[in-house]
Length: 183
Image (cartoon, rainbow, N blue to C red; front, side, top):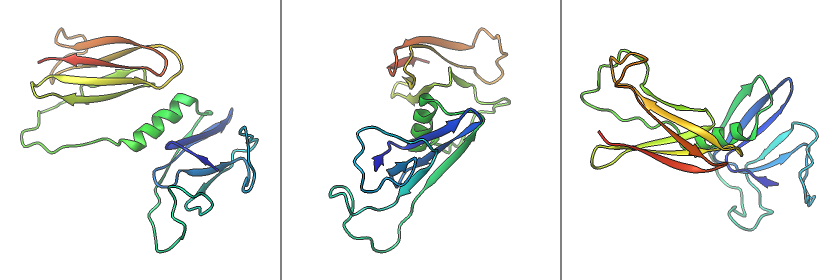
């Protein structure tokens, strides 16, 4: 058995799938591997088996299987084999889904959300601080350095408007950084 963080990617040149589980972190890959002690992963086939419960491990798992449980899975089909960054981002998005808040006086947006982050391999976590500033924590989920671009526009801004706000930040491989905007 292998314990996954949150997601697994399986694929070949013809396509792939991202597979994630929040509640069942044990998996076997390639074939039934029960009773084998592998020092390396050998999975010539794209078989993924999820183990909901296991009483052969003596920590973090119940020794008995009683009652009912809730086991959540999520899948996404791809046109190509997934890469490491896609699997990490998929697992992270499962762990921290979009958070929404209800506000009494929402702005009258006549366009899509004005916030963006590029490239897609950079994850962003925006937070508003006590002074009304915006702190955006960035995380590069690839093994290569990237230049992250973070920006936003206000309602009514045109694409090349001078009120468009944009910041760039160099992020090392698997690195984190932060952008701060003060109103």
